Length: 307
Picture 1 (cartoon, helix red, strand yellow):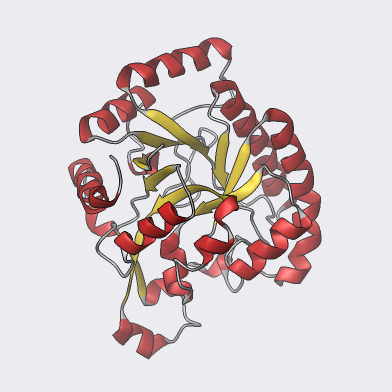
Picture 2 (tube, rainbow, N blue to C red; picture 1 turned 120 degrees about the vertical axis):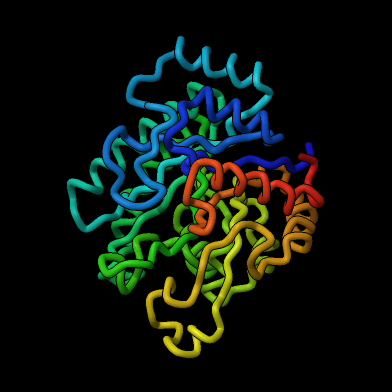
């Protein structure tokens, strides 16, 4: 099965699920990663988007969605929900874990069997201090995912951009060293990565090299680029807020060598979707601009994938 292109639906929050599928079909995308936040106000950019309400889904609704996807010839690559399950706020963490379980159930009901999310983190605590809660929270979550036949792909964004995320960020799973420890302590086959190379760029990590070690744990791939402003980096240094010297960009507009990256995915036998995640503010001024961003991203990646 060849690699194919999808997009993360957070960039079109004003559309209903049917309209999202129409857009994907119109633009030539094969997949969408469907956002499943609890309905309500977003807590940050790209959050709070609900294209599928997992609180109300049942077998009838699942069958309707499956039929709609088949008719549009657009598959759902994963159900996405990106909270902080290890938040130091106990109520926030409880809500995140509870909703994540519902997303897992919905993914099983729909036959998608993949959920994309964050591990979470208390940003004020060290990795070592976070570890007991990580094991306590994620051990049962992964047991539940296994019981549902669902895999969980953890994105590797540090979530380290604002004062309340400083200094450790809101996500533990940011580096190969931590991934190695995570998969050693929780070796569940339901536990893997939603691999986003753009975050590795600004962390100073080769975005291609880890693919080979973690080839069996890469369940989903995000396509987002990153541009480093060297003048600003020289002024602020790497310990400053990353947004002072780094900018998320559309694929092909940053520092990632997409041909080499996709070639490495092919070499490790990855056969899943490559999902465009638009977080480029230069293309967020209107719906038309965001639609254009999906067209441009697909054009940049299409030389390397089947479509």
